[in-house]
Image 1 (tube, rainbow, N blue to C red):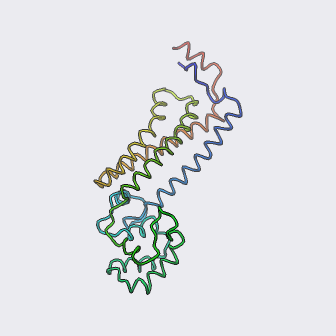
Image 2 (cartoon, rainbow, N blue to C red):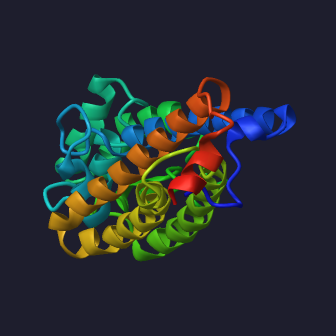
Image 3 (cartoon, rainbow, N blue to C red):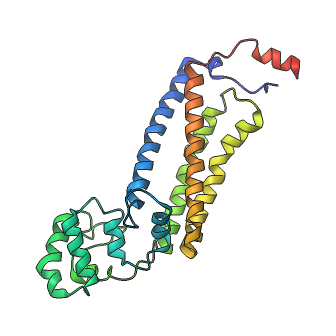
Length: 252
């Protein structure tokens, strides 16, 4: 039976449907940008093209076969340097990070390609302005540090919760049956947030939990896509019959 508090999009004023549509468009574009950012941040960390489970494991637990600088150069910063310059920096690191070689060749590369962002002006971005700072990154890659995980966790949990609260509010006006399925779709991204963020810490302890990171992100993406498509379709194209409410009431 249709709940007495349920109002389909077609029963709402045009202004409210326009508001919902505008919000869905912006949220949809923003989610696409977020997916591109996630891909660009993690893809290629294992030296292979594309985003893999190994890339996620390396991002959170580190790479025991590479240094922090290598992890960045083959991961989120892979597109900032041409292959020849990146390979020269990696050879320098693996060759012992010699100070003289740094002054002769590596310093020039980093100043040209990295200094714009890594100049020390942003406390959240590692500076690369002198040999000591760069050599400090020639240490074993241990993944994202705990403080960064905590900082990113609260940002994600507040931000994503707000996004899916808005999405759920809009989707709640869609006519979807059975009602329990609709409720599961609304609740799924909130469970997925806990899975996703919680698995960051578990993956740092054990790389095998990288699968949970992928599952959590996948559930969020599928729920977002389903709510977005159904909402947009029903706002403008779905015909909610005037007698639907009374028929369900009679059947109930």
